[in-house]
Length: 484
Figure 1 (cartoon, rainbow, N blue to C red):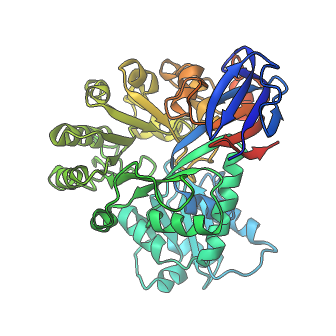
Figure 2: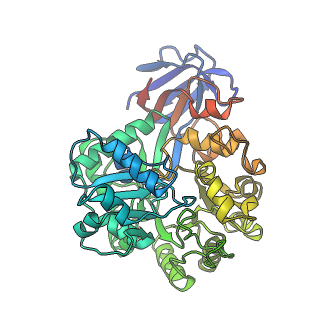
């Protein structure tokens, strides 16, 4: 592995100017400018940019994100009818497709309801599949339902029905999808990403071994284990954190994923209080009597549970399960919490894996469906002050795979001209950066050389400027994966 010298970089926020040596994929020295002259086979001049630990997206769905980057965006639709109109506009002049795919709609505030008949009237006989932004709703036309051998009264499938129907839809050939994923990771590297935790509902270990056999990934990848693969993973002898043979050290076995509830937008997040006007509390996907044995079996075989919980009751159930099993792990999303549950994350040694970009996206639907409770929604400051470990992700394609977007949302609590939403839950920039870097708070000798060089110091920048952060270089294990 070639040595590397990063010349004239500012090490950390408002840090001093220094030269940084990298040897064998590890930071070997941080010294006065000019002291490293003649050291390296490769020299990168930082031009006074800021050197930070590499950024980690702690929760993404890479195949879906890669595909969604090529789909018709519907995020601006204000109604079901508006989504269909937007779809029709985007199809003008587009080549024929077996299935017309749109992504990103948010129907939690729509005045009308999606229905298969709307799609049939607009595109008679065409197979149309529209995915909600949170991936928990799939809106299908009659032809799309027929294509996957199903019937449904509305064509609007939620939660497990949504996921199983998604798996049944025709998809691009594996080699094409692999190319899309490689492109998506290259784009992530341009934003300073050095590692991604891949929550794709698939055999991620096998998929990434195949991809790594074609080309080295642009980032590290942690391969999350889906529930249906628990027995097979145990038979393989894989444990969370194991380095896989493929990938030249960049691929590891991730945690074991379980779902307790659904999502806010579909009103399936499981809550202690009923949703206004519905009398329903959401959907309990995995009751304690099923959740606890699965977590215990995973823990006994070295697999750390990662438990999806969005509603406050789902989070209570997840925390109770971790307490009963007595194992480390993660709660994914933790969007609505009871005050008494906040300190339990730190007390149980759990990671709160959160996606700050969801907060500005969801503020309006939360104000409606979690009315009177939003002071404890997306409670990042409360979690941080309780001693919990925060890790930030995007949940791409729910939000773009761009950590600067999440960092800006965590710090500013808004992404438009409106005032910050519950600014008391904003967190300091240094903490947001650490939570986006696997807990690293600086660049030190002995660190793995997963690094990002920014053209500007993030300190004091506005949230708009943070979202537009210019990245000069990204380095993984001492190897540049992106150079501006």
